[in-house]
Length: 536
Image 1 (cartoon, helix red, strand yellow):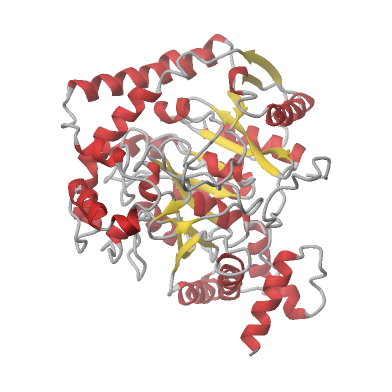
Image 2: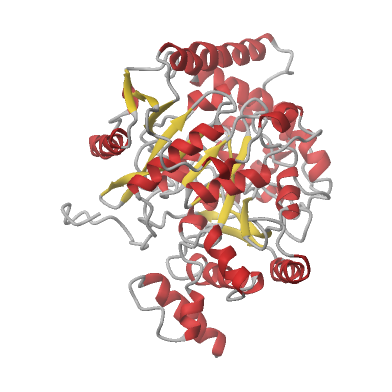
């Protein structure tokens, strides 16, 4: 009975954010985690007001109250049964030797395509991999454990990171169902790192790790009023992450603040012999949390990519214009860029590269990280899906998986031409060319369209996005909350050249501190369409 009363109290507190948390000491303690930053949580643990075990329990309780019940966000696909024990071990270590660093005792959620050697599974949202328990941690997970983080659980995602069907619905997987946006429950959470974004937005964890092939970190971050960082390919190891494209894949932070995202990036970046792309990471990485500069926008030259404004919604364009006014007020010099060369011509080559690389790299992952799985190859997965199509394909098919299976080896002329053409267009003739010609620190644009209505029958109806250039180039991309349109979040993107994370983080932090667009969700069923003048 006591547990049920506390659970009810947590639900009430979650839905009534204006309610006094000081009604009882227990009520106050249960609201510690809502919108709390890593710095807030570390202060509470260092002072003895909170332990890592208590903190972890609060997040687990919120997952039960908000994710599995209440608005039923469906962001967390699985919780770590050892999370409390791991947190308690971090508490004991803190008492004995002090904290390892800023991530000590901090609960983190992981997208369910990141391998963990524990009692959890790693499935990419596919029931074909249910039961697969990796024998080793992904490099990113090993780094987090070394930093003292508590692995809280796995998050739902667009199945196979949205490379299954041309008509897929972001945030839906056959294992996890549909993740819902906490700013309007009938709207898309975007994808493919849908669960990671929603969980952090709803304070189900302090921070989360997503993965990004093209927009899969930054787009759901934008749709859920978060900061998301897609790092330069090679800054963060992909070893132990279910692959889509070795040319474009990367893991990265998803957080409520730029400071938290920078701290998390510090924890996961580094050189890994198992991922050749990280050979330069040791020389290139910086202490990102040291680059949080409120005055970074003063004198910064920013290229405003004008053809990425408006899209399907001029109201969003108006919101981003207000964000540009903030940049200017902080001393930035804005340079209009009508269009970055090639930014609308990358799609066909990019998809070709993804299909070839998925076909040729997935088997190696399955062999090393899913040795007990019944599927060993992409062909096995396609056959499994067909045998279980009532569960796997009730809404959309697997035509992209089939197209990938039809591709040849990585020495194919079609593949090599698509890869080289795309990279040259996005790098030398795209981002780098514009930055050099106009002497720019970064490019800025709306991250993507506003969250659209979920429709499992028709699939996604997104309003486009400013994601492909950085993705194909393998360059960094930071999105930060840029405002709201009738309660729906939109993000502002900062894109730069390779290894420019320190500068992008500084610019994003300066904008964040001046604009303060981050706010907690209230879980409405829909936006207020009957009163368009209601405060958003």
